[in-house]
Picture (cartoon, helix red, strand yellow):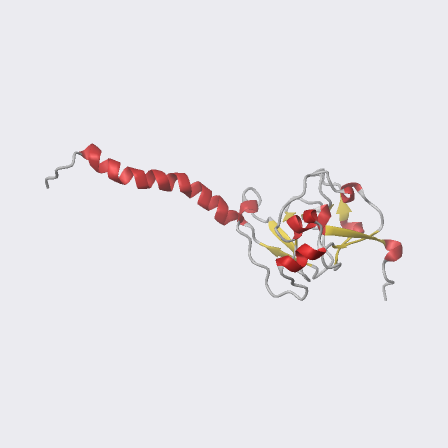
Length: 179
């Protein structure tokens, strides 16, 4: 087989697309790994504009845009009073204060949820190093709360690492009586 192109010239033509692919590929993988699943049908679902009217800019960033507050910035991180933590967006009960512990991460952490209150979704970027890691969302409104990791204390072995701005603390004295 004869060709007018030298072997060097032939490789140069395919080399550029391969170099572009080699450059773009890692960014595409990170983008796909961090892609969030959309909020499904939840009772308290609202549009981004509706949430923007209700929430502070910081809360909107975390709850709707799925951002993360700076570690150590929440007063709830070191609050250990009796009570309950509700969703800051829809006020649904999420965590009993009795399940809160000091994880040393700078975010309020719990080892368990109030049953049926938190949905967990796979967010591939967080699975690097912890294949059990999950994004946590409020079951009622679908807002982003934080993440669950599998390095928590007994009895569950789970660490629900929550953004404080996604939570609202209700002291025990203000909770309705249990029937």
